[in-house]
Length: 186
Image 1 (cartoon, one colour):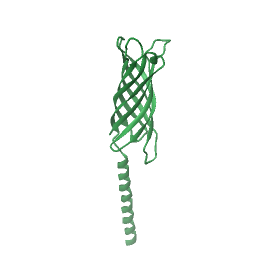
Image 2 (cartoon, helix red, strand yellow):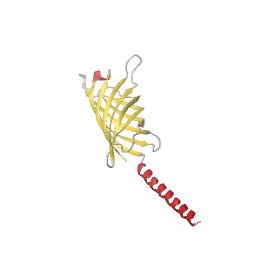
Image 3 (cartoon, helix red, strand yellow):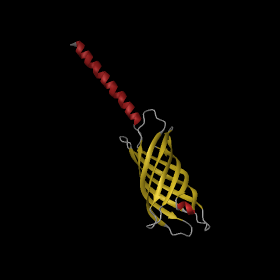
Image 4 (cartoon, helix red, strand yellow):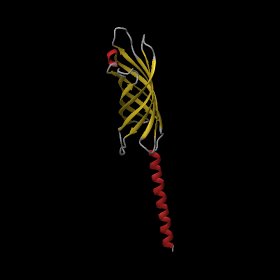
């Protein structure tokens, strides 16, 4: 009887130890699912849009939610794009863009130093230029990037194709590829 009680106590202590240490490991892997950040980079116009706009720059902010249980999260972006002059009129087109995107992060084994992801969504694209009427249109975007976790923050590098539905039937829509580098803070 004493022997069975002793084994029962040892079994309970062992099970409690395994549970406690596995909970510590799980808690260490859980992180704040909300992050905010800043991005900047080059904005490259394509197609007909490239006929009157040169390569420019962009800067903006983002708020991102990553699910702790599935690889899909969501991101809200607000970005200002300023393009270079390409015509004789001195028009420098600019866009103010607000998008809601889904972010699918590839599963990686621990320890990982680079986390690739796919991103895509839609939003409002407000187009302006000197001497042109201001217009706001719906657009979509899709792209890919990588996140590199560092101590206390992460860096991101991404490229996206943006298609803005701003044309009449029979003409092409505005397209561009912003290439971004940014910082994410949790």
